[in-house]
Image (tube, rainbow, N blue to C red):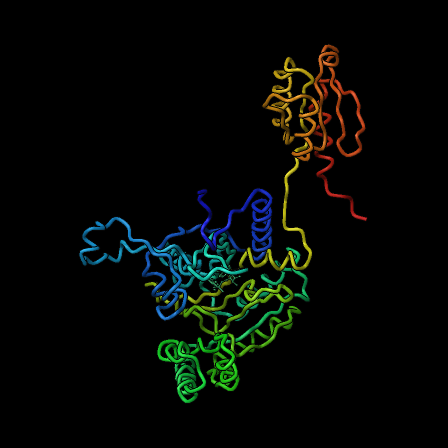
Length: 446
Ligand code: HAM
């Protein structure tokens, strides 16, 4: 039986992969105008980084990590031996912890230095139950800004994300931006206690999972999908009523920057996010109209304690990540084309095998001139070669035949209009390269 792809994983075939690359390149261009530079960190980190950074009680760490044990003797382990911390490796479930580790490890924000702005794109891995919009390997594009505490950093990041979504083609009216503050240790600790108390007081109406989590991570009850829990949590204490003065000031400032930038948002005091490192600003962008339960296309927030958590000096941070596959669903729902099939500029066909060497040489010269050119490599009649040219979506076909070649020329057929003309071989590359460049030139402004 043929071996298939495991559930929750996807192949990106050429047309999809082409769109992904274009999507990442656009993000890179947009984010660069805000000063973000690319960073590439490994897809594997020590398990401890995620346990400490994301939080042991989160779903991501407690049940969704792909963890491997490297370089240990399996027989010793099975006999009850312990695994050294340095041998416990995990496929990254998200990008923030790794980037913050790299910033700390390479001292990218020396004492008193201005912020460092980094962007990344690549696969993340979570052993979640697969469904539409929820994969076990998915691609994120994210940014992290470390070394600045100001609320303008948060607002700038959110504005940048919304701008990117619009530029990529997600209609404004099919997205909603939800905003909240998680406060800081000072205000969140008593708030968490208040929510825990509240859940315990309503224990008879809450699901067993919320009750269990009330002990470790009571705020997760806000994310429970159970109708009974949702009804109870609608009356739970709201973080907005518990924020300390500095956190309230920060939140108000973010809101006024967003308003000044003309970015619409909805306050959502129940937005808690699933990762433990957040302090103050948290936000999420949800796509409407996708018919998918997994409608968060991006999200992030501030994490002022994370650098210390991974062993660095206090360094405030802010960032977000967006999910490529969920954006693709949102774009499809909006009727935006998400495939980038390639087409060949020039296909060189031969009437007889005798012209193959000439075809081979012409194709090379066209490629040297930057033209996407191809030829037949199998036994095929001219008709068969025309079929192949069609399959490659070739725009032009050069037909090399004995009579024309003898006169130093060849026939060029335009596959759109079917018009044919004879072009001298000496000028062929120059003529076709100019036409291809002309087709690529941007249309003059009206
Ligand atoms: P997150 O909300 O866990 O945040 O993930 C960001 C985005 O990744 C989500 O909004 C969603 O679009 C996508 N995503 C998450 N899980 C899946 C999945 N299983 N399948 C498909 N797409 C998924 C973070 O990861 C944080 N690191 C964001 C951040 C950066 N916060 C601060 N800096």
